[in-house]
Image 1 (cartoon, rainbow, N blue to C red):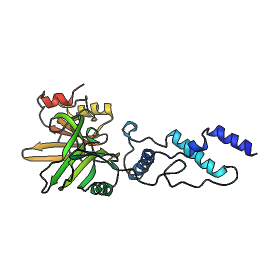
Image 2: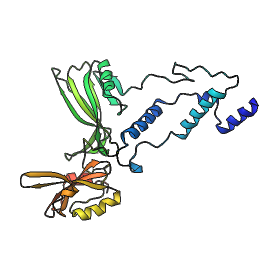
Image 3: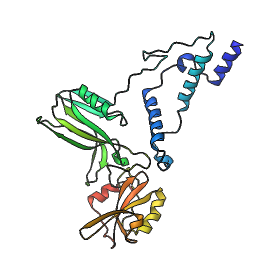
Image 4: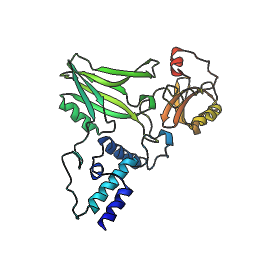
Length: 307
């Protein structure tokens, strides 16, 4: 009977006990936690478009199989005794220690800091900075796609004349018109005595409004290579549907007054002059009554580079 049962288990999930009990990676556990967080936070939000969702639904097959076999091994192991759980973090158990939210690389005269977990509690960032003698507050803000994973704001002050220097990598087109590098981390002088506040862009949840944005036409953004400037609002709406994007808000100016309103307050079928990300799958269109002149500035060329 025991032999038949062992054979059945091996055919159902052909993994050894050692493989079954191998710890699930910290990244996988954090991914599962993020899925749960998204599910709880998104109950009242619109359903996400499949290609905009960061996480896949459900555990990866290999992880699910490993967990199932681990449970089977604990329950039906011959002899009726379950193996004692390990607390050492080695094979056969899980390491309960949290994964570091930041990485610190010491170099001559300074420390390179990068964000490893953009979803960590701000208290964890503060404690990890404090462990290195730094008084730095780091917060995460929902950012449009091209700014997610970058430093979007930095402010510091105090008696230390040395400066925090950004670590720049890759290529980014900024809202100010620069076609330059993306800020991916911070280079902090060793023994830095000032206080500092830093905002780091993270991917927005479905329905969550962005706190930091680039141009909607910038590389990586939802309207890259889909120009709607010079079109009427109705014409722009038809073109936006090609990308499954909705114009949720509109901005216009009359004299010295500026207005940002929803579609129900539109002054008319005016012309589009610009577009800014508003939330995942949503943009804000800047409009004016008269048809705008066609522009061909260095910034425009950077926005539509590669189109």
